Length: 286
Ligand code: G3H
Ligand code: 13P
Ligand code: ZN
Image (cartoon, rainbow, N blue to C red; front, side, top):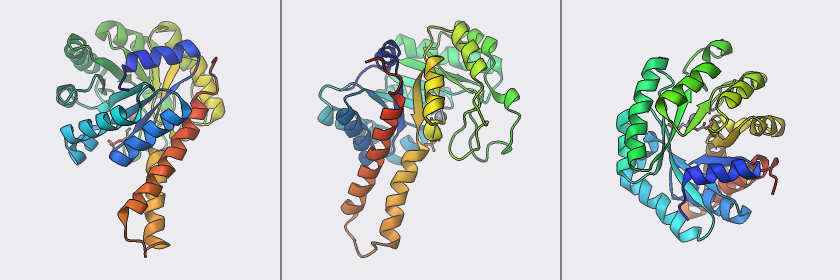
């Protein structure tokens, strides 16, 4: 069932585990996420980005996600969230199409501008009961900056994070402690002290970890101990999906029924999600 992201994150925090937030772009991927959640009996978050809205059409992707959740998960809570809304207009688009959880990612702007735009989003969103994730600091992606960044310059400053949340009243915060998107090489070890300071200053703010596709057991455990309640995963799902497509193009090219291809791709993505759910639940008190 479609559920509030706020409640899903609170439930995770209370029970000592983290929620997986999985990026999707089509029906098969939504089904993979929802089926994994149902099989594992645990809430998850389905997320889309502006690029996916452009790819599928706003209302189309909204209706696909909603229909799969309604049809395939009668009891397991599933959140539906806009990931990386880079502008006020994108967030408005998502809220207008019916989403009740959004991210405003103004992390590429100055702190002052980030606060201004995030505050504007929160005012609009909260008036409509929509949950807001903000971001401070950078979780880089390939092509965005040098492959060997000065991490101290781009990671989240704890005092600034406290200021941003106090000034904007955003509901959750994406943190940068050396994590990175896609195949960007991460800091050898996340800056745990930094995460701890952020959590101490903002004990009631759920912290979100982007770039979690390549996160392994010990990192997940350390992060959850320090206030992370949600891990974002996209790249590993893309790899699983594309690997199946490549196999069909190369080894099984006599199969021309695309439904056979998509069935295998969907199952491959679901298997990855199930493994991630197990990983994110390792600290569970349940
Ligand atoms: O960080 C989010 C995604 O990995 C990038 O998604 O290509 O749909 O913008 P996108
Ligand atoms: P990955 O690129 O590590 O999958 O991160 C995804 C993400 O952070 C989406 O917001
Ligand atoms: Zn991200």
